[in-house]
Length: 330
Image (cartoon, rainbow, N blue to C red; front, side, top):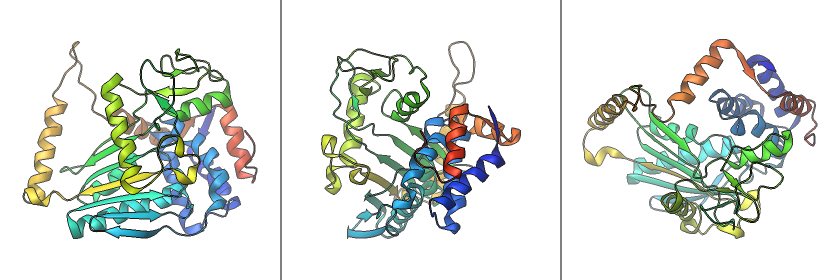
């Protein structure tokens, strides 16, 4: 169905009120999840808002730094709503980078957010290189295997340029787990060759799928392990099967100050030249190569101009239920 953006916002606002989200934070939370939907990442948009909103009322207090040493710090989010705690951690990373040249913030005990790119972009907008990542329960495995050991371990990077920051946001699995959760609710088939069953065979049946598969075979395996370590043992956070709940899931926000290499204007100009060079790439058939994040930005701009979103009927029903204060409707 076609859902007007304003109606989506109104329903989300009603759901936030029903879940006791602070009034001065409501628009921020709505904007975050709508951004995922507008950018064509429905697993991180309205569907995730409908899922995560059941936890909004579980917040215990504002995030706080509980341990710090030099460029590193640990944040106890006190079960804060995901976008709110992520903004706190990204801001803490930039403050630390201004003092030490780098800010490396580990966060735990938080609700989940939607897309990662917003937080690396926030860091880049402050003048730093931004890296943001998180883990999850052991929900992924490597190509040819069947045992879920790693988290899905998404990663986002952002760097300042003379224009908008260059932002890339990716999962280290071939498809995010949100795709599986939504397919189980809707009854849709899964994308091919992204999930395996208990025997390690690819399946598009959401009922049979046991875990997601890491991209890039063993090269992707190494990247996922790196994310696992940076969101886990670096801060003393649980990893793999020890991540047994939302509250024991690790998040990492990194801000790096480029000033050691010269003036900030030189840094951004160099980045701009690189991005301009990347834009000159062409595909084998002569078309312009697509840069990371470009399709998402273009899709969001089109949706904003149209003022509508295309959403499944079942998702609309869940959103209406949340707006009425029903956080159990599947």
